[in-house]
Image (tube, rainbow, N blue to C red; front, side, top):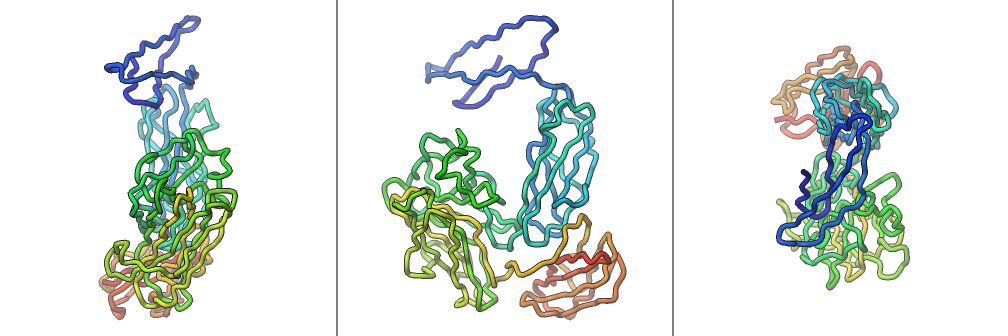
Length: 439
C-alpha cells in the first residue's frame, strides 16, 4: 500500500513482473475527515535496470584552498545492490583522479563519497569539475557524469553560485565567510505568478534564487531567466505588496587596507522594461561586533535606481582605510516588484583578489602545525624549491630560495602573533599560497 500524507509529492513503488504476466493497477483514495481533494497526475510505468548508478550531485567543499575536498552524491538507480564502483574527477581538463569505492548501496538508496585526493583551488577563478561514476554491468551510461563549476573568489566576495538553492538567511562565500539577511519590513513579498518555490507567502528578505527549479521551472520566463552569464543563481529581493521594502544583505567584517579600496556588485531590475525599476542604497557600519541595521549609514546620499540589464555598481571605501567595516545592500523599493544582485566583491581589503599564476594541481601540500607557536614545516608530495612569507600588507619577511625537499622546516619565532601568507614554489614551478597563523 502507498500512502501520500501531504499535498504535492511523488510516490514510487517497485515490483518485479513475471514474464508474459498481465497486471492491473488501481488506486484507492481516502482522506482524513474529507480534508480536501486528491489529484493524481503523470502516472508512469518505467522499466528499471538491474545495474544503474547515478551521479546526483557534486560539490567542492568550502573553503576553496590548496587542499580542496570534492564531495559526490550518488544513487543506486537499479534493482540490485551495489557493493563497489569507481568515481573519478577531472578539473579544468587536467589529470583524472580515480578512486575505487567499496560500500554497499541498496536499490534506490543514496550515498555520499568524499575523495581522498584533494585539489588545489587556491588560485582565484572558475574551476570546471567533471565527475564520472563507473559500475560493472551498468545498463544506463547517460547518468554517470556530473559537471559543475567551483568559483574561488576573494575571501568575503559573494557569488550566489556558492549558495544553496533558495537559501534565505545566511549566504556562504567560497571561503566559508557568511553574509546575512535581515528582514526589516516583515512583509509578505510578491509571488511570481503561479510558480511555487520555497518560502512563497512567507516574510523573507532575500533568496538565493534558481529559476530552473521552481515548479514549474521559470526557464521560459524572460523576466526571471536572467542570471549573469554562466550562472544559475542570483540574489532575489522580492518587494512587499503593500509598503516600502526594508530588506538588508550584510557582509562579513572586512578590513580596508588600501586607499583605492572599493566595493562593487552586479544589480538589475527583474523587468524587461524601464517602468517601476527597483531602488537600493549601499550602506556601511564600523561597529566592533555584528551591527544592527541602525548602525549603518549610507555611502552615498542618493538612492540608486537600477536598470533593466546587469550593471556594475562600484563604491569607494578609501575613507575607511585601516578600519574594519561592514557593507550592506539595503533594498528600499516601494511596490517595484524585484531587485536582483550578484557578484558582490571587495578590492583593496584583506582577503581581496590581487593576482595569481597558480596552476590547477592535484597534490597534498600543507603547513603543520598551523597555527604555529614558532616552528612548523612545509610538507609536499613534490619537492619544494623556495618559499616566501609575507604579512597582510604584502611585505616580504622571510624567504628561502635554495631548497629541494618534500619536508621543509620553517622558523617563524621572529614574527609577532598574527596572520601571514606563505608562498611556496615546487620543482614544477607550481605556485601555492597558504595562510599561516602565528600564535
